[in-house]
Every structure is written in C-alpha cells, then in structure tokens.
Length: 309
Image (cartoon, rainbow, N blue to C red; front, side, top):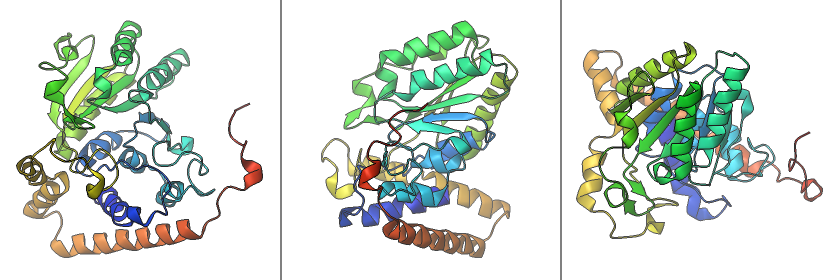
C-alpha cells in the first residue's frame, strides 16, 4: 500500500511538468482494495481494471519501471508506450488490461471467467470497477451471465462515492440489488474498503469459492477517492464536495490505520517504516530517471501491436 501511495504522490508532484503525455487518474485513498484483493491471487489469475489502475497493476505484481515508462509513453512501458496511464497491460503477471471505457473491463473479465471454466482451469477472474461503472447495463448483464454459468468471476466494486463529480446518492437508490441475491447463487459482501484486513478476508472467501466451482461473487468495498477525478488537485473541479468530507476520509486513511495497527501490535516499529519509505523513494527515483531517458517508440513502428495473430 505504501509503495502504491508513494508512486501516486510522485506522479502528482511531477505531472504538471508536462512530460507525462497521458491523462492520469490517481488511486490515493483506495490502496487497501487492490492490495487486499490481489494478496489472495496467484500470478496466473486474471484481473481486469479501470482507468484508475496503477494500484491494481502494482498489487498484482506489475513492474514499477514499466508502469512509469508507460506514463512517459516510452517503448519500455508495459504497453510499449501505446496505452498510457489508462491502458496498462501485462499478461506476464495476469493483468489483462485496464480500460478508459466506464465498465469496459466487466464483460471482458466475465468472458475470461467463461474461458477458465471451459478449459477446466483453477484460475479466477477478478474485475475491478467503480460505482460509476455500476450504473452501466453491461454490469448487470455480466453478473447475470456469471450466475447462470457459475463462473469463477469476482466482481469488485470500489465505491469511492463519486463518478467524476456526481455523488453516488444522486445516481443510485439504496444498496446495489445484487446484495439481495441468495448467497448460494452469488456470494456478496459490503465491506469497509479502507480496512485492508477485512478486504483480504472477504476476497479470500470469494477466491476460495471460485476455485471450488461455487460460482461468482460480488464484493462492494466502501472507500474514498482522496483526490479529484483526474489530474492533480489544481485541475479538480470545485464545489462538488466539501473540505470537511475530504478531511473526514483522510482521517480514515487505509495506510495510516494499518501502520497504527501494526505499531500497536509490535509487528513493526517507526524506524522500519522509515527504512521502507526510503527504499521505495529510491526505487521511484530510479524508475522516473530511467523513464525520462528511455526512447520513444520509433516512427516506423507506428502500426505495430494493432492486431494479434
């Protein structure tokens, strides 16, 4: 979680230098969801993600240097410089893509679950999406199909309360209707998404069920997007949420709360956290330095990677 957070803060501090030629959507505040879920997964398991995908990619084992290089649109990026921040792909770690289309990964991840079942594999397919994507019709179609075919798919709704500037209360009435489906058809849960232990436990149960052929799960993790929809704070629209609301959620920061829990239990001490932080900062220094020096895709390769054979 700390590695994801420090990366996001570094991106935020450098973005307005205009060297990253790609829109960014920061994951600050939601780190516990990606980490808690992906800690239950194997490298060969699949995940599909959204435009806010940096955390999912790193939590699944993605390469930090390749991620940063992709932000700079370099040939060494995980998507060869063709995708940018919203289109990270790395099949070597089971990250089968993030999408700038709201809800775009939902049918893809469901189809991957169908593939797993048809091939009789022990993999699972996890789909990360936000509360805005939960408004999309394809979400309901995909969950219905996954229930019908008992697919090993885990639908992970990261309810960060906002779709761009629209609060979830202005778009949805009450709980998502899937919470009312019998557990034997669809394992569901609505959990504090800022508590990484609770996220890990509920996701672990969903993964076990999927591997045992018991069908899909729908997990809603209630969290908060501490920054704006896109870009850095100076680019965020004003007036759609209050300072008090943001400060309330910042006080429930998933990283701070986990650090306090570990310190209180004597699992870790402050000096170890400092060492960890310095190590990550050095890793980030190296990644950003390399990204600036790496080459852009050659002009003659413009048409590469458009099709697969």
